Image (cartoon, rainbow, N blue to C red; front, side, top):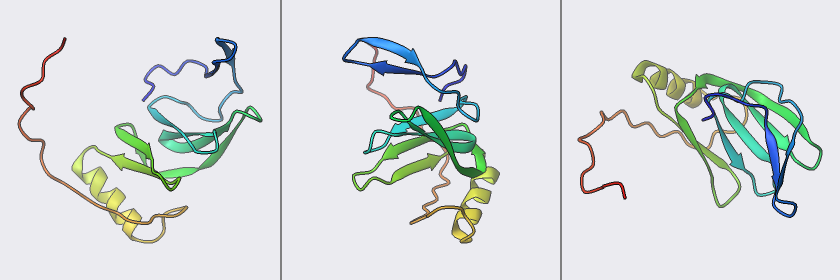
Length: 129
């Protein structure tokens, strides 16, 4: 995520230049940014999620997250959905799983998988070049 959220900018590869974009309605600290298939950008993190439309230079709030997130990933799936994987303290993750499985989550939740394994041994065989 973006720990020190500077004002957002848009890169235009045709001009090889950056330009400022509209001010988001919420902080972009601790968010993941995922480019959607239609070119919009999904920002998930903190306690909300936003969608930025570069054609209109406009941010839209999609709704509050059930539990604030700062340690997560967001991946665009081939069918256009976005998979958000949360990690954190076990009680927070257990509460999130409970909320998602309870059917009261905003939006659409297709499947909830929970893995509460403890971190394993550090990986070996990797070195920096």
